[in-house]
Length: 268
Image (cartoon, rainbow, N blue to C red; front, side):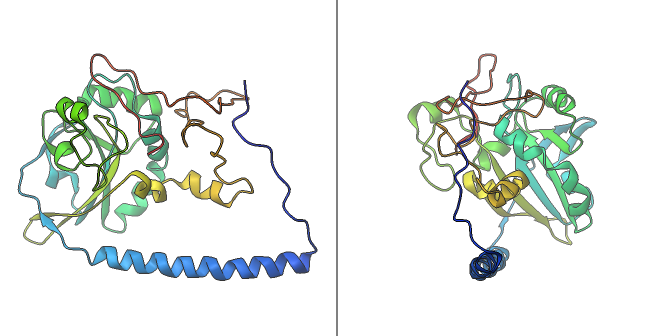
């Protein structure tokens, strides 16, 4: 089996003084990027909100929950749109990659007045089974039978998929899948009214993946250039094997499903 990574190419080897000079020059660029990112975050906070008019009702492990209930007493809510459709045997491996980072963040977010929850269209029993398998603790509810995923632009009808007549990430998608990933944030005011503040999709979710941030600092980076799709090396965390390697030309596998069209967010 071909290895998942390319051969490490030596960079120019220099003295410590030359290394330090080059590092300081690059640090100036890093600081400029940080300032640009801070400004982008400030502008994001100034975006307008839209009032949530529908009364969405979700199914949780303990019963019915409204969108307001998902706030769990806080003013801000972050919803991760997890790709797990009805009848799927397992969740999208890309969404699972992101979700592996959630449990460590929830307590910190809660102490900054933000509740994190995941929402999928699969029935709650299917969500609970996969959640148990993966060992996750974060709050995860089902939107099965509601229009929530469709309204937030992450689920699509069979007619839309067949015709390609839908938008994802505010434009025409490159792929026609019935489920795609995203993150949406909501805010609740003093009167209990709920507003949709922001949604991000596709590469806009990169910032949520701590593993990628580590890889970006490693000598070889993400090392995905030789793969047919960027995330072809990825597996659910319980499917890695000792000495695991991926075929560089392997196509993206889609989660298997009973009857419904399954998809995966790898490569978006």
